[in-house]
Image (cartoon, rainbow, N blue to C red; front, top):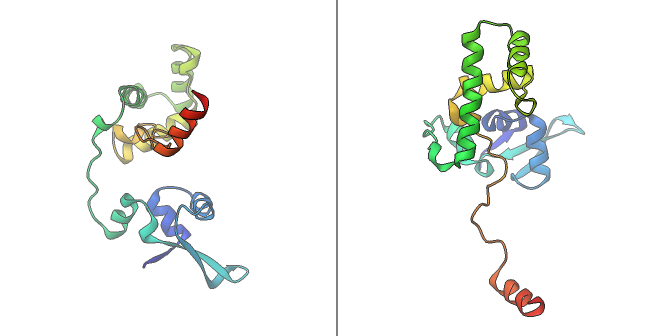
Length: 161
């Protein structure tokens, strides 16, 4: 088993150190403490094998396959395309970030308003990868999965229906 420092794991997963620590506390990643410099003379280490496949592939230096954009819903793809369009408009406008955000917010409905930080975040993601990096992947990880065991459903149905 390969044990990584929190910084290494965070880099591989493209998240912050605190996100890795929190995930380890929630037992999402296998972790252990070893002697060393740190709080109370111990350091947190994360098992490489417990990280997502993408992070493991990055560690091994393997090429990551491009994500198939068709696996996402139409709404997710539309939102990602809209974000990419905003980034492209910003690049073509030649305006400063403040000027572009002001122009964009003035010419669009209030619910579509953006901030400079949002523009920079979209720009960074779009340049790192492509449109798939702009897809909002929060939630939906269990779409189509049944969470109620058949026995529990039968009991519920017999008692309440």
